[in-house]
Image 1 (cartoon, rainbow, N blue to C red):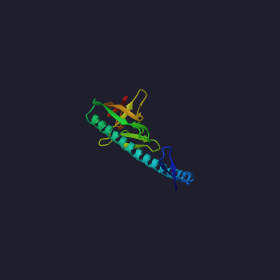
Image 2: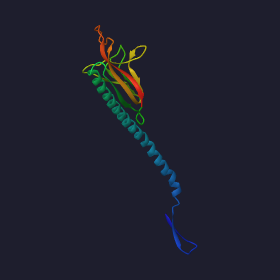
Image 3: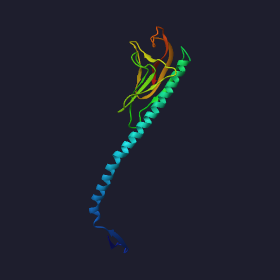
Image 4: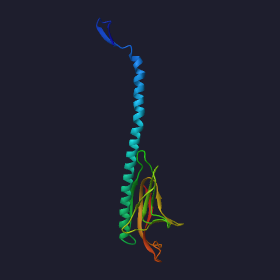
Length: 182
């Protein structure tokens, strides 16, 4: 590195540092920076993705547990008891919630809430002590209430009907329906 002195028009001198190898060093420095970025970005992205999936699933299970506690209360309070419950099944930053199935069909387990995150197998929460028949009733048949990601208001109501335990009598069950998407 050489120092060059120049005289300005005003008569003052100015020192300028010159480095003739600087232009040659820039591409090498740029390549080194790009290699470091290329190595660290995928690792950082995978870490963010893993953290987000864990947080999204934790939040989803907390909302499902909240919904399950409300289902249990509505059921234990007897026939005719009803309430609306606001739930938030929101997506994460990179993880999406594909669907939530509340209740089941005649062939399945009635006391479940299933959920599916993108790129992951379905999981479920079993509502027990007592086992509570949960279903969505529509014009054609009975089955689970299926909702996607987002905020929802779910209506819960204890009713009597259907023979869920095959003993020849109508049983109490919790009917679930979607009131609104918030």
